[in-house]
Image (cartoon, rainbow over all chains, first blue to last red; front, side):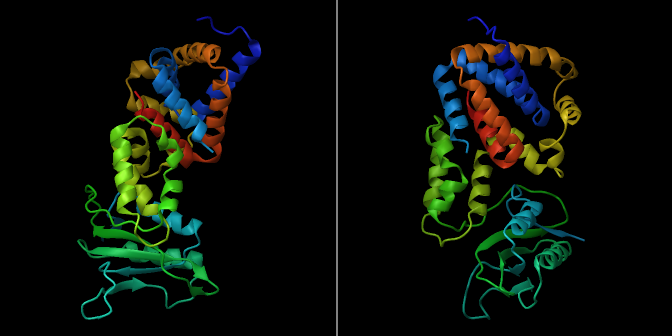
Length: 56
Length: 261
């Protein structure tokens, strides 16, 4: 799959990674896992999304 | 000198004190039993209290700290706390089982029966999070806890929540570690350099030295995520907001993510 060439999206992704990483050193592992799940286990990935959606 | 600590160490005495502070619970009583026998000769014995005082919140908590920090090792107690109400104590509504120790930790034994309504329980454990998660064992254990607590009197569900976190602890090692650390704020709220040193402490040196490369790989991974699910960035922004504004909920969310495989 092609990565995005949208500069704005790249910037938003970079910012959100930076924000999350500044307080959570484990977030890189977690987000890598999320990316793997999306590719390899779509159903489990959907469960992860449900968790994120359930957050107030 | 010994000190009282909760029977369930996940609670942590500091968490109890913070909990009291948040709810303006200035009054406490420690009994030697959880029985409410009307016959005083058979009933519970009052070990310490400040309900006969007019302590304000600060004074009440300071007095409780003094009591908790100086007791004979080996005693078991039941700490009931309640808020100040117009200068007088209101109704007791929360109990923590505690025991005195010389500081040597032990595994939780017989966590106290939890009190509160099933609705409180549902709210506290973010049942919405658990609802759709495909983890049968976890769901079963949470449902059992709900069942065990359904007939108990209304009140605060702190103990229930902590019991549940105790149950899911094997699935959330990072969260459990943070709870057990003497100064969880150093982990939860550390800056980037703190975070890196923590990471280095817990991972191999090789892994620690590859953070930048990892972040780059992650950037690419997230861009791929975005290509398939454009809403993911918004969700992660929400997660970042949560991390900044509600660290407890953030911990819950990430611990649940950690259970997925």
